[in-house]
Length: 229
Image (tube, rainbow, N blue to C red):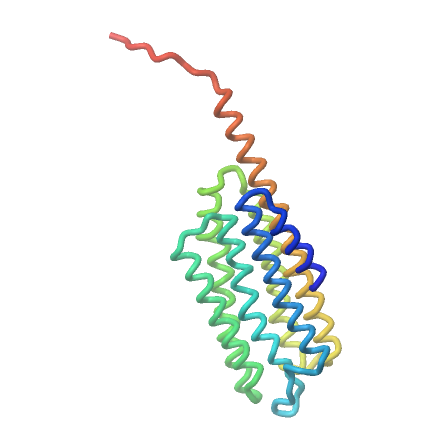
């Protein structure tokens, strides 16, 4: 995470345009926040025994700070409207908050909160697949393939989190804490550092498609106007 933050930080410093600087800066803080999480866990902080099970509650604090920045990357790339951006951020905040309550609740109450948090995540899925996608395709013509890949990979990674939660000691305890930590770590690296690189690639394609469109418009033949009577 620290290496990812370093890379994106240098990218922000050396960015040649405002758009690239925004994208690099968001990715930098996403990785920086995540690196603080792993520093805390390495130092044995941010975790407690809750109702007889080990609970790393600091994850939810860092997720509440980093996931909104991830969604802001979507908003930037898709030129998303303020109401839709607010809906994404609000649904995400509710999802993280209720996920924390589920983690800190005794069984079987935790499953109720898990369902509530999962419902909020379904709202995020809908917002990305329907209104966001429509706005992005309208605001960034001819970029459907790039956004389809971005959304698909993002949702595949995020969907794995509630699966790990239900299998871990927080849920049915089918996997131990070591496997839980391993899976969360892999997902965090992929959904933060990996997604940062994917968003850079997506923006590069958007710029390239925009440049091609401008060239086509500038070279289009001019048909002289003729009046008919």
